[in-house]
Length: 488
Image 1: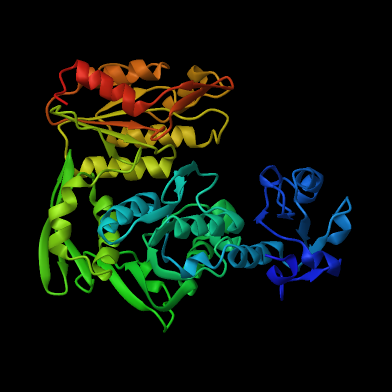
Image 2: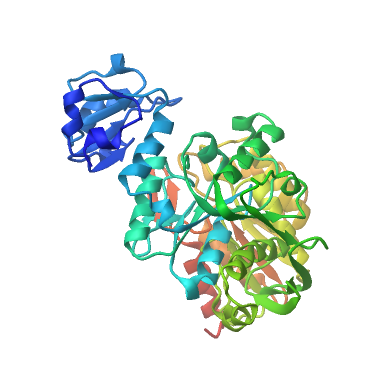
Protein backbone atom coordinates (compact mmCIF):
# COMPACT_ATOMS: atom_id res chain seq x y z
CA UNK A 1 0.00 0.00 0.00
CA UNK A 2 1.01 3.62 -0.47
CA UNK A 3 2.25 5.22 2.75
CA UNK A 4 -0.33 8.02 2.53
CA UNK A 5 -3.22 5.57 2.07
CA UNK A 6 -1.95 3.37 4.87
CA UNK A 7 -1.59 6.17 7.40
CA UNK A 8 -4.66 8.28 6.64
CA UNK A 9 -6.06 9.50 9.94
CA UNK A 10 -3.05 8.10 11.81
CA UNK A 11 -0.50 10.76 12.71
CA UNK A 12 1.25 13.26 10.44
CA UNK A 13 3.65 12.64 7.58
CA UNK A 14 6.29 15.33 8.06
CA UNK A 15 7.37 14.98 4.40
CA UNK A 16 4.03 14.80 2.51
CA UNK A 17 5.76 13.71 -0.72
CA UNK A 18 6.76 10.48 1.05
CA UNK A 19 3.11 9.44 0.89
CA UNK A 20 3.80 7.83 -2.52
CA UNK A 21 6.23 5.31 -0.99
CA UNK A 22 5.19 1.64 -1.28
CA UNK A 23 4.97 -0.06 2.14
CA UNK A 24 5.43 -3.82 2.41
CA UNK A 25 5.72 -4.39 6.17
CA UNK A 26 5.83 -2.76 9.60
CA UNK A 27 8.14 -3.76 12.47
CA UNK A 28 9.48 -2.55 15.80
CA UNK A 29 12.51 -4.88 15.46
CA UNK A 30 15.29 -3.27 13.38
CA UNK A 31 16.72 -6.68 12.49
CA UNK A 32 13.44 -7.57 10.74
CA UNK A 33 13.31 -4.42 8.65
CA UNK A 34 13.35 -4.92 4.89
CA UNK A 35 12.83 -2.95 1.71
CA UNK A 36 9.59 -1.03 2.10
CA UNK A 37 9.28 -1.34 5.91
CA UNK A 38 7.93 1.15 8.39
CA UNK A 39 10.17 1.01 11.45
CA UNK A 40 8.42 1.85 14.73
CA UNK A 41 10.73 3.48 17.27
CA UNK A 42 9.39 2.31 20.62
CA UNK A 43 10.83 3.70 23.81
CA UNK A 44 11.10 0.91 26.40
CA UNK A 45 12.37 0.73 29.96
CA UNK A 46 15.72 -0.70 28.88
CA UNK A 47 16.13 0.25 25.21
CA UNK A 48 15.13 3.11 22.95
CA UNK A 49 14.10 2.21 19.40
CA UNK A 50 15.44 5.54 18.12
CA UNK A 51 18.94 4.13 18.57
CA UNK A 52 18.20 1.48 15.92
CA UNK A 53 16.77 3.70 13.19
CA UNK A 54 20.06 3.70 11.29
CA UNK A 55 20.24 -0.09 11.32
CA UNK A 56 16.62 -0.38 10.15
CA UNK A 57 17.28 2.12 7.37
CA UNK A 58 20.30 0.17 6.13
CA UNK A 59 18.11 -2.94 5.83
CA UNK A 60 15.57 -1.05 3.70
CA UNK A 61 13.16 0.72 6.07
CA UNK A 62 11.68 3.73 4.26
CA UNK A 63 9.78 5.42 7.09
CA UNK A 64 10.04 5.86 10.86
CA UNK A 65 7.00 5.99 13.13
CA UNK A 66 7.76 8.00 16.27
CA UNK A 67 6.24 10.26 18.89
CA UNK A 68 9.40 12.37 18.98
CA UNK A 69 10.69 13.45 15.56
CA UNK A 70 13.60 15.31 17.17
CA UNK A 71 15.14 11.96 18.16
CA UNK A 72 15.33 10.69 14.55
CA UNK A 73 19.09 10.83 13.76
CA UNK A 74 19.12 10.42 9.97
CA UNK A 75 17.35 11.60 6.84
CA UNK A 76 14.36 9.27 6.54
CA UNK A 77 10.64 10.07 6.13
CA UNK A 78 8.87 10.44 9.48
CA UNK A 79 5.33 9.57 10.54
CA UNK A 80 4.82 11.42 13.82
CA UNK A 81 2.10 9.97 16.06
CA UNK A 82 0.89 10.59 19.58
CA UNK A 83 1.16 6.97 20.76
CA UNK A 84 3.39 4.68 18.66
CA UNK A 85 2.00 1.47 20.13
CA UNK A 86 -1.59 2.36 19.33
CA UNK A 87 -0.67 3.68 15.89
CA UNK A 88 1.42 0.57 15.15
CA UNK A 89 -1.59 -1.65 15.81
CA UNK A 90 -3.86 0.44 13.59
CA UNK A 91 -1.38 0.55 10.70
CA UNK A 92 -0.52 -3.16 10.98
CA UNK A 93 -4.18 -4.20 10.95
CA UNK A 94 -4.77 -2.06 7.86
CA UNK A 95 -1.59 -3.18 6.08
CA UNK A 96 -2.28 -6.89 6.51
CA UNK A 97 -5.86 -6.61 5.27
CA UNK A 98 -7.89 -6.72 8.50
CA UNK A 99 -7.16 -10.44 8.96
CA UNK A 100 -9.11 -10.64 12.24
CA UNK A 101 -12.26 -10.06 10.17
CA UNK A 102 -11.40 -13.03 7.92
CA UNK A 103 -10.92 -15.45 10.83
CA UNK A 104 -12.91 -16.46 13.88
CA UNK A 105 -10.48 -15.21 16.50
CA UNK A 106 -10.49 -16.82 19.95
CA UNK A 107 -8.68 -14.97 22.71
CA UNK A 108 -7.91 -16.46 26.11
CA UNK A 109 -6.71 -14.56 29.15
CA UNK A 110 -6.09 -15.58 32.76
CA UNK A 111 -3.19 -16.53 34.99
CA UNK A 112 -2.91 -20.24 34.17
CA UNK A 113 -3.97 -22.62 31.43
CA UNK A 114 -3.75 -20.33 28.38
CA UNK A 115 -1.24 -22.45 26.45
CA UNK A 116 -3.10 -25.70 27.13
CA UNK A 117 -6.37 -24.08 26.08
CA UNK A 118 -5.06 -22.96 22.67
CA UNK A 119 -3.84 -26.47 21.86
CA UNK A 120 -7.07 -28.09 23.07
CA UNK A 121 -9.40 -25.75 21.21
CA UNK A 122 -7.35 -26.16 18.02
CA UNK A 123 -7.73 -29.94 18.30
CA UNK A 124 -11.46 -29.85 19.05
CA UNK A 125 -12.19 -27.49 16.14
CA UNK A 126 -10.19 -29.52 13.63
CA UNK A 127 -13.26 -31.06 11.99
CA UNK A 128 -14.62 -27.55 11.28
CA UNK A 129 -11.44 -25.96 10.03
CA UNK A 130 -7.78 -25.42 10.77
CA UNK A 131 -6.81 -23.16 13.67
CA UNK A 132 -3.66 -21.10 13.87
CA UNK A 133 -2.08 -20.54 17.29
CA UNK A 134 -0.21 -17.68 18.91
CA UNK A 135 1.18 -18.17 22.40
CA UNK A 136 3.97 -18.94 24.81
CA UNK A 137 5.47 -21.95 23.04
CA UNK A 138 5.25 -20.95 19.38
CA UNK A 139 3.36 -19.19 16.61
CA UNK A 140 1.64 -21.51 14.11
CA UNK A 141 0.24 -19.94 10.92
CA UNK A 142 -1.41 -23.07 9.53
CA UNK A 143 1.59 -24.22 7.51
CA UNK A 144 4.69 -23.43 9.53
CA UNK A 145 5.72 -22.75 13.11
CA UNK A 146 8.11 -20.17 14.52
CA UNK A 147 9.54 -19.88 18.01
CA UNK A 148 7.63 -17.44 20.19
CA UNK A 149 9.38 -14.25 21.27
CA UNK A 150 6.73 -13.58 23.91
CA UNK A 151 3.27 -14.90 24.84
CA UNK A 152 1.44 -12.08 23.03
CA UNK A 153 3.61 -10.59 20.27
CA UNK A 154 3.70 -6.90 19.41
CA UNK A 155 0.80 -5.80 17.20
CA UNK A 156 2.92 -5.63 14.03
CA UNK A 157 3.77 -9.33 14.41
CA UNK A 158 0.31 -10.24 15.67
CA UNK A 159 -1.51 -8.92 12.58
CA UNK A 160 1.21 -10.26 10.26
CA UNK A 161 0.69 -13.75 11.71
CA UNK A 162 -3.09 -13.47 11.46
CA UNK A 163 -2.68 -12.40 7.84
CA UNK A 164 -0.59 -15.51 7.16
CA UNK A 165 -3.24 -17.69 8.83
CA UNK A 166 -5.98 -16.27 6.63
CA UNK A 167 -3.85 -16.72 3.50
CA UNK A 168 -3.00 -20.29 4.51
CA UNK A 169 -6.64 -21.34 4.81
CA UNK A 170 -7.17 -21.20 8.56
CA UNK A 171 -10.73 -20.71 9.76
CA UNK A 172 -9.80 -19.99 13.37
CA UNK A 173 -7.03 -18.30 15.34
CA UNK A 174 -6.43 -19.15 19.01
CA UNK A 175 -4.51 -16.44 20.83
CA UNK A 176 -3.00 -16.29 24.30
CA UNK A 177 -3.67 -12.72 25.39
CA UNK A 178 -1.54 -11.72 28.36
CA UNK A 179 -2.18 -8.80 30.69
CA UNK A 180 1.02 -7.20 29.34
CA UNK A 181 -0.31 -7.64 25.81
CA UNK A 182 -3.54 -5.90 26.76
CA UNK A 183 -1.84 -3.03 28.58
CA UNK A 184 0.68 -2.48 25.75
CA UNK A 185 -2.01 -2.40 23.02
CA UNK A 186 -0.68 -5.50 21.27
CA UNK A 187 -4.24 -6.56 20.36
CA UNK A 188 -5.67 -3.07 19.91
CA UNK A 189 -8.54 -3.05 17.40
CA UNK A 190 -8.77 -6.85 17.32
CA UNK A 191 -12.16 -8.42 16.59
CA UNK A 192 -12.72 -11.39 18.91
CA UNK A 193 -15.43 -13.96 18.19
CA UNK A 194 -14.76 -15.60 21.55
CA UNK A 195 -13.10 -14.17 24.67
CA UNK A 196 -12.18 -16.77 27.29
CA UNK A 197 -11.38 -16.20 30.97
CA UNK A 198 -9.59 -19.11 32.66
CA UNK A 199 -8.77 -17.99 36.21
CA UNK A 200 -6.92 -15.34 38.18
CA UNK A 201 -4.32 -15.81 40.90
CA UNK A 202 -1.38 -13.82 42.22
CA UNK A 203 1.10 -13.11 39.41
CA UNK A 204 2.80 -10.19 37.64
CA UNK A 205 2.19 -7.86 40.58
CA UNK A 206 5.62 -6.36 39.96
CA UNK A 207 3.99 -4.91 36.82
CA UNK A 208 0.39 -4.33 37.88
CA UNK A 209 0.93 -3.40 41.53
CA UNK A 210 -2.11 -5.16 43.00
CA UNK A 211 -4.70 -7.80 42.18
CA UNK A 212 -7.41 -5.29 41.30
CA UNK A 213 -5.22 -3.65 38.64
CA UNK A 214 -4.26 -7.10 37.36
CA UNK A 215 -7.96 -8.02 37.06
CA UNK A 216 -8.84 -4.78 35.30
CA UNK A 217 -6.10 -5.47 32.74
CA UNK A 218 -7.71 -8.85 32.00
CA UNK A 219 -11.11 -7.18 31.68
CA UNK A 220 -9.82 -5.27 28.65
CA UNK A 221 -9.95 -8.44 26.53
CA UNK A 222 -13.75 -8.51 26.68
CA UNK A 223 -14.02 -5.03 25.17
CA UNK A 224 -12.76 -6.63 21.93
CA UNK A 225 -15.80 -8.90 21.46
CA UNK A 226 -17.68 -8.38 18.21
CA UNK A 227 -21.44 -8.18 17.72
CA UNK A 228 -22.78 -11.70 18.36
CA UNK A 229 -19.54 -12.86 19.97
CA UNK A 230 -19.36 -14.86 23.18
CA UNK A 231 -17.54 -14.52 26.48
CA UNK A 232 -16.58 -17.96 27.82
CA UNK A 233 -16.04 -17.57 31.55
CA UNK A 234 -14.94 -19.85 34.40
CA UNK A 235 -17.96 -19.46 36.67
CA UNK A 236 -16.18 -21.14 39.59
CA UNK A 237 -13.61 -18.35 39.77
CA UNK A 238 -14.75 -15.31 41.80
CA UNK A 239 -13.02 -12.98 39.37
CA UNK A 240 -14.82 -14.65 36.48
CA UNK A 241 -18.17 -13.59 37.91
CA UNK A 242 -16.96 -9.98 37.93
CA UNK A 243 -16.16 -9.84 34.21
CA UNK A 244 -18.22 -7.17 32.47
CA UNK A 245 -19.64 -8.42 29.16
CA UNK A 246 -20.62 -5.91 26.44
CA UNK A 247 -24.35 -5.94 25.62
CA UNK A 248 -23.51 -6.89 22.02
CA UNK A 249 -22.05 -10.27 23.16
CA UNK A 250 -23.33 -13.38 24.89
CA UNK A 251 -22.08 -15.28 27.93
CA UNK A 252 -21.20 -18.99 28.23
CA UNK A 253 -20.42 -20.08 31.80
CA UNK A 254 -18.38 -23.22 32.42
CA UNK A 255 -17.41 -25.05 35.60
CA UNK A 256 -18.89 -27.18 38.35
CA UNK A 257 -21.32 -24.56 39.63
CA UNK A 258 -24.99 -25.45 39.12
CA UNK A 259 -25.49 -22.19 37.18
CA UNK A 260 -22.87 -23.14 34.56
CA UNK A 261 -24.12 -23.48 30.99
CA UNK A 262 -21.48 -26.17 30.40
CA UNK A 263 -21.16 -28.04 33.68
CA UNK A 264 -18.88 -30.92 34.60
CA UNK A 265 -18.71 -33.50 37.39
CA UNK A 266 -15.48 -35.35 38.11
CA UNK A 267 -15.72 -39.14 37.90
CA UNK A 268 -12.07 -40.01 38.49
CA UNK A 269 -8.62 -38.42 38.52
CA UNK A 270 -5.93 -41.00 37.69
CA UNK A 271 -2.20 -41.18 37.15
CA UNK A 272 -2.74 -41.47 33.39
CA UNK A 273 -5.75 -39.25 32.80
CA UNK A 274 -9.10 -37.88 33.96
CA UNK A 275 -12.71 -38.95 33.52
CA UNK A 276 -15.72 -36.67 33.95
CA UNK A 277 -19.32 -36.09 32.91
CA UNK A 278 -20.39 -32.95 31.03
CA UNK A 279 -23.86 -31.41 30.86
CA UNK A 280 -24.82 -29.09 27.99
CA UNK A 281 -28.30 -27.97 26.88
CA UNK A 282 -30.01 -31.07 28.24
CA UNK A 283 -27.40 -33.48 26.91
CA UNK A 284 -24.91 -35.51 28.94
CA UNK A 285 -21.72 -37.33 28.00
CA UNK A 286 -18.83 -39.01 29.77
CA UNK A 287 -15.38 -37.98 28.59
CA UNK A 288 -11.90 -39.32 29.21
CA UNK A 289 -8.82 -37.21 28.54
CA UNK A 290 -5.10 -38.09 28.83
CA UNK A 291 -4.53 -35.02 31.01
CA UNK A 292 -3.85 -35.00 34.74
CA UNK A 293 -5.69 -32.98 37.36
CA UNK A 294 -8.93 -31.08 37.78
CA UNK A 295 -7.37 -27.88 36.43
CA UNK A 296 -7.02 -29.61 33.05
CA UNK A 297 -10.73 -30.48 33.10
CA UNK A 298 -11.35 -26.73 33.39
CA UNK A 299 -8.98 -26.13 30.47
CA UNK A 300 -10.74 -28.78 28.42
CA UNK A 301 -14.30 -27.65 29.15
CA UNK A 302 -13.49 -24.04 28.21
CA UNK A 303 -12.31 -25.31 24.82
CA UNK A 304 -15.29 -27.67 24.61
CA UNK A 305 -17.68 -24.75 25.11
CA UNK A 306 -16.36 -23.15 21.91
CA UNK A 307 -16.46 -26.39 19.91
CA UNK A 308 -20.08 -26.96 20.93
CA UNK A 309 -20.96 -23.33 20.11
CA UNK A 310 -19.47 -23.85 16.65
CA UNK A 311 -21.92 -26.67 16.01
CA UNK A 312 -19.74 -29.70 16.71
CA UNK A 313 -21.90 -32.35 18.38
CA UNK A 314 -21.14 -33.74 21.80
CA UNK A 315 -21.37 -37.27 20.38
CA UNK A 316 -18.78 -36.46 17.72
CA UNK A 317 -16.41 -35.13 20.37
CA UNK A 318 -16.82 -38.29 22.48
CA UNK A 319 -15.99 -40.46 19.46
CA UNK A 320 -12.90 -38.48 18.44
CA UNK A 321 -11.51 -37.66 21.87
CA UNK A 322 -9.17 -40.67 21.85
CA UNK A 323 -6.74 -38.78 19.60
CA UNK A 324 -6.32 -35.91 22.09
CA UNK A 325 -2.73 -35.26 23.17
CA UNK A 326 -1.12 -33.10 25.83
CA UNK A 327 0.65 -29.83 25.18
CA UNK A 328 4.43 -30.39 24.90
CA UNK A 329 5.97 -29.92 28.33
CA UNK A 330 2.72 -28.88 30.04
CA UNK A 331 1.70 -31.71 32.38
CA UNK A 332 2.75 -33.96 29.50
CA UNK A 333 2.22 -37.62 30.29
CA UNK A 334 4.74 -40.18 29.07
CA UNK A 335 2.84 -43.45 28.66
CA UNK A 336 5.01 -46.22 27.26
CA UNK A 337 3.15 -49.05 28.95
CA UNK A 338 4.78 -48.65 32.36
CA UNK A 339 2.80 -49.26 35.57
CA UNK A 340 3.58 -45.82 37.00
CA UNK A 341 2.81 -42.32 35.82
CA UNK A 342 5.42 -39.90 34.44
CA UNK A 343 4.74 -36.20 33.90
CA UNK A 344 7.01 -33.58 32.36
CA UNK A 345 6.11 -29.98 33.18
CA UNK A 346 7.57 -26.51 32.69
CA UNK A 347 6.80 -25.41 36.28
CA UNK A 348 9.82 -23.44 37.47
CA UNK A 349 8.35 -20.96 39.94
CA UNK A 350 6.79 -21.48 43.39
CA UNK A 351 3.23 -20.79 42.20
CA UNK A 352 3.50 -23.04 39.15
CA UNK A 353 5.10 -25.84 41.18
CA UNK A 354 2.36 -25.64 43.80
CA UNK A 355 -0.40 -25.95 41.19
CA UNK A 356 1.23 -28.88 39.43
CA UNK A 357 1.93 -30.69 42.71
CA UNK A 358 -1.64 -30.14 43.87
CA UNK A 359 -2.84 -31.73 40.62
CA UNK A 360 -0.50 -34.69 41.13
CA UNK A 361 -1.75 -35.14 44.70
CA UNK A 362 -5.38 -35.15 43.50
CA UNK A 363 -4.79 -38.46 41.70
CA UNK A 364 -3.63 -40.07 44.97
CA UNK A 365 -0.52 -41.92 43.73
CA UNK A 366 1.15 -44.56 45.88
CA UNK A 367 4.22 -42.32 45.99
CA UNK A 368 4.82 -38.90 44.47
CA UNK A 369 8.43 -38.64 43.27
CA UNK A 370 9.60 -35.18 42.23
CA UNK A 371 12.68 -34.27 40.16
CA UNK A 372 13.30 -30.51 40.14
CA UNK A 373 15.83 -27.72 40.42
CA UNK A 374 16.04 -23.94 40.07
CA UNK A 375 17.49 -21.85 37.25
CA UNK A 376 20.69 -19.90 37.58
CA UNK A 377 21.07 -16.12 37.13
CA UNK A 378 17.40 -15.60 37.96
CA UNK A 379 15.38 -14.58 41.02
CA UNK A 380 17.24 -16.21 43.92
CA UNK A 381 14.55 -15.39 46.47
CA UNK A 382 12.20 -18.03 45.02
CA UNK A 383 14.60 -20.93 45.55
CA UNK A 384 13.89 -21.54 49.24
CA UNK A 385 10.15 -21.31 48.58
CA UNK A 386 10.41 -23.86 45.77
CA UNK A 387 12.15 -26.25 48.13
CA UNK A 388 9.49 -25.67 50.79
CA UNK A 389 6.63 -26.37 48.37
CA UNK A 390 8.13 -29.60 47.03
CA UNK A 391 8.91 -30.71 50.59
CA UNK A 392 5.21 -30.24 51.43
CA UNK A 393 3.89 -32.45 48.62
CA UNK A 394 6.55 -34.99 47.58
CA UNK A 395 7.08 -38.41 49.10
CA UNK A 396 10.51 -38.58 47.45
CA UNK A 397 12.61 -35.59 46.36
CA UNK A 398 15.41 -35.60 43.80
CA UNK A 399 16.99 -32.16 43.80
CA UNK A 400 19.03 -31.45 40.67
CA UNK A 401 20.03 -28.79 38.11
CA UNK A 402 17.62 -26.87 35.92
CA UNK A 403 19.49 -24.38 33.69
CA UNK A 404 22.40 -23.39 35.97
CA UNK A 405 23.60 -20.84 33.41
CA UNK A 406 26.64 -19.12 34.92
CA UNK A 407 26.11 -20.25 38.51
CA UNK A 408 27.55 -23.25 40.30
CA UNK A 409 24.81 -25.94 40.36
CA UNK A 410 25.80 -26.97 43.87
CA UNK A 411 25.33 -23.41 45.14
CA UNK A 412 21.86 -23.26 43.61
CA UNK A 413 20.91 -26.59 45.19
CA UNK A 414 22.20 -25.38 48.57
CA UNK A 415 19.75 -22.46 48.43
CA UNK A 416 16.82 -24.67 47.39
CA UNK A 417 17.67 -27.16 50.13
CA UNK A 418 17.18 -24.48 52.79
CA UNK A 419 13.44 -24.89 52.19
CA UNK A 420 13.54 -28.69 52.53
CA UNK A 421 13.14 -29.77 56.14
CA UNK A 422 13.73 -33.50 55.76
CA UNK A 423 17.27 -34.86 56.09
CA UNK A 424 19.19 -36.43 53.23
CA UNK A 425 18.43 -40.12 53.12
CA UNK A 426 15.84 -42.56 51.87
CA UNK A 427 13.40 -39.97 50.52
CA UNK A 428 15.66 -36.99 49.71
CA UNK A 429 18.55 -37.08 47.26
CA UNK A 430 20.51 -34.46 45.35
CA UNK A 431 22.56 -34.81 42.20
CA UNK A 432 23.58 -31.90 39.93
CA UNK A 433 23.52 -34.29 36.93
CA UNK A 434 19.90 -33.97 35.76
CA UNK A 435 20.00 -37.10 33.59
CA UNK A 436 21.19 -39.18 36.53
CA UNK A 437 18.49 -37.70 38.77
CA UNK A 438 15.79 -38.61 36.23
CA UNK A 439 17.23 -42.12 35.93
CA UNK A 440 17.24 -42.52 39.71
CA UNK A 441 13.59 -41.45 39.97
CA UNK A 442 12.50 -43.88 37.27
CA UNK A 443 14.44 -46.76 38.78
CA UNK A 444 12.77 -46.35 42.15
CA UNK A 445 9.23 -46.02 40.76
CA UNK A 446 6.72 -48.82 41.34
CA UNK A 447 3.14 -49.63 40.36
CA UNK A 448 0.78 -46.74 41.04
CA UNK A 449 3.54 -44.20 41.68
CA UNK A 450 3.73 -40.79 40.00
CA UNK A 451 6.94 -39.09 38.86
CA UNK A 452 6.96 -35.36 38.15
CA UNK A 453 9.96 -34.01 36.22
CA UNK A 454 9.60 -30.27 36.65
CA UNK A 455 11.30 -27.12 35.43
CA UNK A 456 12.25 -27.53 31.77
CA UNK A 457 9.10 -28.89 30.11
CA UNK A 458 9.30 -28.38 26.34
CA UNK A 459 12.91 -27.12 26.38
CA UNK A 460 15.42 -29.05 24.30
CA UNK A 461 18.66 -27.68 25.76
CA UNK A 462 20.32 -27.12 29.14
CA UNK A 463 22.28 -23.89 29.55
CA UNK A 464 25.59 -24.29 31.38
CA UNK A 465 28.21 -21.51 31.41
CA UNK A 466 26.76 -19.83 28.33
CA UNK A 467 26.56 -23.04 26.28
CA UNK A 468 23.24 -24.65 25.34
CA UNK A 469 23.75 -28.41 25.51
CA UNK A 470 21.16 -30.74 23.91
CA UNK A 471 18.86 -31.90 26.71
CA UNK A 472 15.23 -33.00 26.53
CA UNK A 473 13.51 -34.32 29.67
CA UNK A 474 10.90 -36.14 27.58
CA UNK A 475 13.39 -37.97 25.36
CA UNK A 476 15.70 -38.89 28.25
CA UNK A 477 12.85 -40.20 30.41
CA UNK A 478 11.32 -42.15 27.50
CA UNK A 479 14.61 -43.87 26.72
CA UNK A 480 15.04 -44.94 30.33
CA UNK A 481 11.43 -46.18 30.58
CA UNK A 482 11.93 -48.34 27.48
CA UNK A 483 15.08 -49.85 28.97
CA UNK A 484 13.13 -50.65 32.12
CA UNK A 485 10.56 -52.58 30.11
CA UNK A 486 8.10 -50.03 28.75
CA UNK A 487 6.10 -51.78 26.04
CA UNK A 488 5.80 -48.97 23.45
